[in-house]
Image (tube, rainbow, N blue to C red):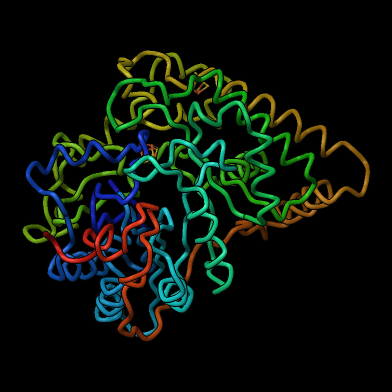
Amino acid sequence: MRKPHLGILVKPASWDCNMACDYCYYRGVGALYEGVERPRMSPQVLDALCQQYRELEPSEMKIGWQGGEPTLMGLEFFPELIKAETRHARPGECWGNSLQTNGVLLNDDWCAFLARNRFLVGLSVDGPAQLNRIRTFPNGRPTHEVALRAADLLKKHGCEFNILVVISAANVEHPEEVFRFMVENEFHFCQVIPCTEPGGGRELTEHSISADQYGRFMTRLFDAWVDNDDPGFYVRDIDNWLHLYYGLSPECCEYRRDCSNLITIEWNGDVYPCDFWVSKRYRMGNVLERTLAQMLQSRPWRRFVADAQHRPAVCRDCEWLWACQAGCYRHRAKLGLGADQRPYLCSAKKRIFSHVFRKLDELRARPGTARLCKFLSELEQKVSAGAFGRPLSAGPDSASEPRSVAPASGRNDLCPCGSGRKFKNCCMKRVGAPG
Ligand code: SF4
Ligand code: SF4
């Protein structure tokens, strides 16, 4: 039912967030925990999940700390998690941690801690200010400056980070501007995800993008990457397309037809499959009551893996099946589509693969000294020699000595949300222990 190297996403503050982005796919999770205002992970749940994960995983522990907004746990929580990981590690063993954040609470203390403990940070920002307008504070104020300030701090402390761009109606017609934003700010690593069912439901909204828009965005983004002629800029989908083109195994689940290597652990220890599927139907149990090993034998998990494996009939004879794998399960099963209907992003995928692979053929055939051609030629030689490694190593590999830390922002500083009130009288009230 599962191969080694299970990745886990942990949601220590669940859906809770200090921003109010209208398109957030995780907002809807609050409905599962009615009456809970400030979900916060307890030390017992933290210890149990580290212990069980360690018992289950033979070699490569990788935890993604996400939300909502995980920094709402307060910086005090994170040295505790390093201690819990260290407590359960075997001698010489390494854990990799990543943190997905909106950057609001990041300051020097946070960034020093993240750099010292080799967290890989994902910073959410959707491009230049005018394309980032859905990402607002609860009072409606824009967040763009805050994200750029967080990026500067991460750079200052030498923290490894990438940016996460959600493609929504706000930026979908501007892929070149999104790419230029990356280059101008020297954001060398980027991941994009399409906003199709905002709020995590099954409905399209005004923020959703169509398959046609997605296909155009991704092919133009690829062209912008080619024209920039600098393989030092990494876009996750492009990296996966290169893997496919050269016959290598892509790392992203969407291109692997494999939804069985990822689980989500919620603030109270509840366990679900991938975080697009945190729902009653797929709840596998709780780490305070059952082990992860038991839960990976449970009926909800087996049901999820079987559901996600199903391919619509329309895909079976498709020329792109080898690369597309019928796409992400959420784009097949949500949005009111039946199990055997055409996946929501189907036309986009056809457009992307035919455009990208044709262009890669051309680049290979084109003589010249352009950096990209040189990069592709070297890549091809490495593949032929069987010596290829992934261009991006995502894994921090050690945990250093934890220390106690100061609050995330000065108590008496102005709140980063721009309310004009002191931090202690505004968003600081949401940081830390359960309320
Ligand atoms: S549902 Fe989509 S995102 Fe989730 S594991 Fe499957 S392919 Fe990946
Ligand atoms: S391109 Fe469309 S038909 Fe082909 S495998 Fe992908 S989703 Fe299925």
